[in-house]
Length: 89
Image (cartoon, rainbow, N blue to C red; front, side, top):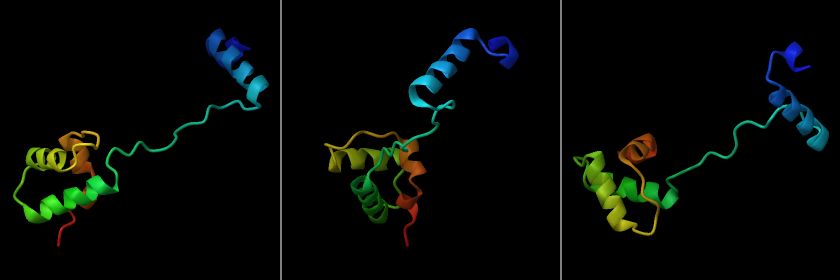
């Protein structure tokens, strides 16, 4: 069967085993999006940007860590991906 499908024997066996055990052939793809910045962090980011629009990502991140020390640390690129942080009127 593996030769017909053009896959390794181990792959074929894992497909068969999954079908027997769980009644499914394909693996479930994806899952919950791992959101690194929660609502509190985004709101604090907005507050920082409103107060200091000239800040760089490094400065915003430093301020964010100082204001919310119990929250997980994120890098500057994660902050920049949170576009809602920069939607300042």
